[in-house]
Length: 192
Image (cartoon, rainbow, N blue to C red; front, side, top):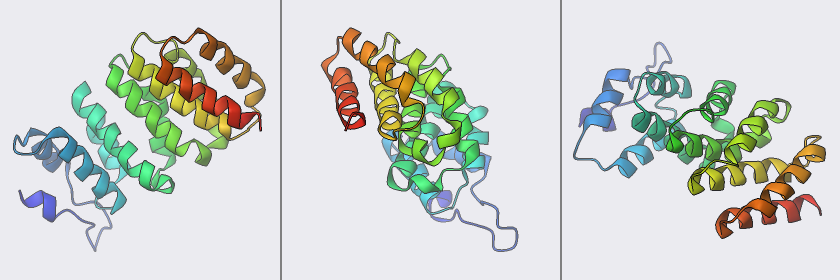
C-alpha cells in the first residue's frame, strides 16, 4: 500500500500529500484492522503528514463509522501531544458531541478531555454538550463524558462554581461504578 509509506508534506506547497482519495483507500483496505488504521492516522497527525483540517474534511463526508475512526485518530494523537490540536479541531469535536452515533460522541468527548486545557476561553459549548451526554443511556458515552468533564473540572476555572455541584449531582445519580469513579476522582482533585 503506497500511501502508508509515502504520505508527507509537499516541499513546494507545504500541504499534506495524503489526499482524500488515499484516505478512502485506507478505510477500504481489508488487510488492515480498524485499530491499525486508527493508529496509523494518529501517527500521521503526530508526524504532520496529514492535517487536522484534511482529516476533519474527510470525516465530514464519511459515514458514522469512518467519522468515529477519524475522531479516534485525533484522540490518539492528542493524548500523546495535546498541543498539536488547533481551534478547528476543538470546534469540530465540540459539535460532534451532539451527533446521533454513540461512538462519535464518546470519541469526541475523549479528545475534549485531552485538549480542554488549551481552550480555556471556549469551554462553554463543550460543557453544555458534555452535561447532556452525561445523562445518555449508553455507559461508554457517559464514561467519556465523565472523563472530559472531570478534566475540565480539574482545570479549576470560573466554570467550577456551577460545574462542581452539577457533577456532584450527576455522580450521586450515576449507577455505573466506572463512570462514578471518574467523577469522584475529579471532584476530589477540584476540591483540593
